[in-house]
Image 1 (cartoon, rainbow, N blue to C red):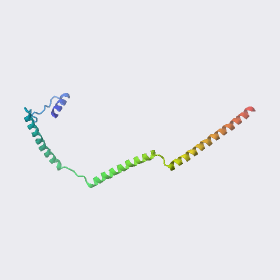
Image 2: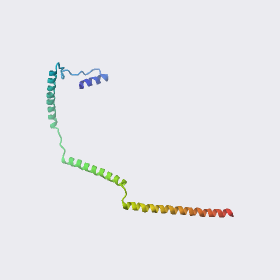
Image 3: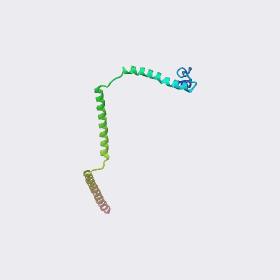
Image 4: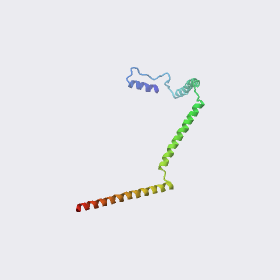
Length: 140
């Protein structure tokens, strides 16, 4: 199947040689019983090659040292703490105010309103005095 895919992609790319599927690896069975025999033989051959391949990799396995594991664990803990800190900080920003904070806000808002009212009254008084001066000058 893989050989057929390679052959079709090679033909599509304009390659001069097409790779034909191997008929020796997959014989064309004439009956169902021969197909079953072929299917049972194939895993045996692949398992023997797989065992030789794993035998070679067993010699090259590496192990993690304790210091590497401790560094990775420490980094993971620091990352989790940083994520928790960011989540808690954002949650405090949008949390409803407590009673003490709401009272402080009300006091601050009342002071701001009183200050705005005082400025508005001073502005109105200055405007009245200006009109008085202008009208007295116009009469002369």
